[in-house]
Image (cartoon, rainbow over all chains, first blue to last red; front, side, top):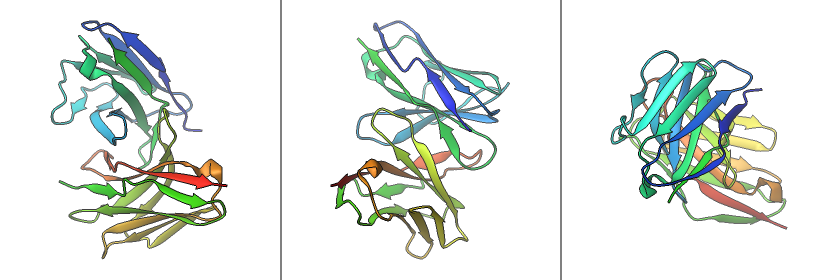
Length: 114
Length: 112
């Protein structure tokens, strides 16, 4: 149980275009979903927290107009990287919480902006 | 701010030995600490959670301790196997809403 999927697993896009990443909880309803970014050899950095039906809460230093988060249902959250630039290239990972403390992570999405 | 520090140097051990990984935190003790496993190019997988009032927690070959005096958690893998090779992440609660702050992780390599 507690499986989280992400789509796509990897994406290459041109600078200036937008990319949407989907995060789904497959066998449970997620009260909260989290979006992280991870650069090579570095820790996961929390970008934002989203609850179904409400606006996402962004961490300090994360541009909310650049990283649009939509949490349409208890099983789906999307992250859209708008006007992507090479410095946005990273590994993006979502996780879902069930109300208990542990989080269940998706497999991640590797974004490369050329 | 509350920080989590893990030894960034890789840990190499021989198969069958016990691997011990360290996680230190700053400021006040978190209500709980969590340990995750991350394989290259994959998302983390939850392993264990230990609460502030628990000294030790076990799950199969895994054992976690929580020492609020030393502000430290130790993560042990007994009878280690090559399949245990991965990066292990420690995380603490970070404010409300079950947010987590992660350490940089320690890479474990179990050799034959």
